[in-house]
Image 1 (cartoon, rainbow, N blue to C red):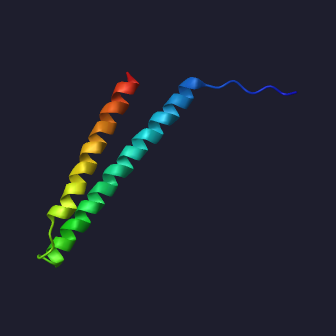
Image 2: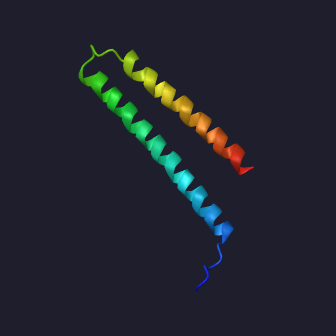
Length: 76
């Protein structure tokens, strides 16, 4: 029976941090695109109620901020 090769935990932690960073960047990019779409819709049709669209965006920013804080605390 062949044994498993040893796990390099430092490399695994580096990979995890890279993946987390990429996820946060993708979330920020998605937020910017969503805000751009809202702004474009408002420019195209000024009668659109922006308040209904901005409130979820503000919630998303708040949740993203909390996730960043939690990830930084876990890193310490």
